[in-house]
Length: 302
View (cartoon, rainbow, N blue to C red):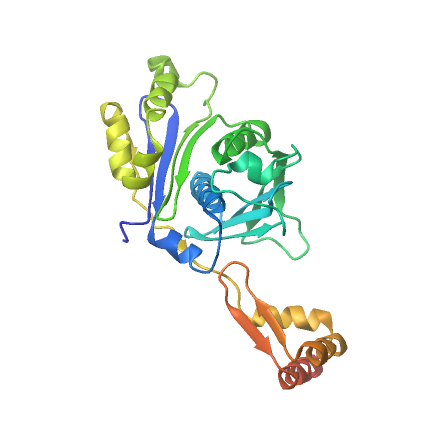
């Protein structure tokens, strides 16, 4: 396993709390090599990426978790997608002409006028064609992405969640604690340790951005919780991976229609489609388009 990219999940036996810590370095560099984000947007997207991975790791779910924030500031749209196996990709769309400074935070970038929205969508692997995604949408609240995600979990999912997130050019990291639901009324662990939740959250709150960015998840959890003796799950490795393909672009062109596709080539010289997530570019000539629609006609006849 690449030690630079690690997700570590854990639980506390005596207290109904589960948690996870994540740090991305190699994967974060791979995600960013196709982007040209300002410093403040890099921090924003890193925090979104770490937070999305932490949320995805807490779900018993086969499919993709998509965090989408619609903004009313310099950032118009920010998206992070986490698929099975912790395969992650991200993109952002900016409002042209709006100034972005290195000191801007989430509020200035995404919620300048109080109209930002945060959505979490779940796309199961067995979703039927035409079936809608599960989607929870809340107003964007707080000063940073951690605040926004905690607000989402409280409002939409009613799950008490604490998050600490940090990102820079070299790493995207985070720590999450979640209160587990009671079983049959008051949980036995709560009877044994009524103050456990507050105590563990107080310990976690001592973490600094510098520690999140520099230490591994194993080092972070040991430093914070060594007296609480958490039980650890097998570490997992998040990776950057994109789902774009030439076949998907071909399907899009078929939906466009042969006449319109050839008109674009007449006007532009070619059809060029670049993936917002990974920077991969697919090019189509007039010959490619004719062949594409000829093949489509042949397939229909067969």
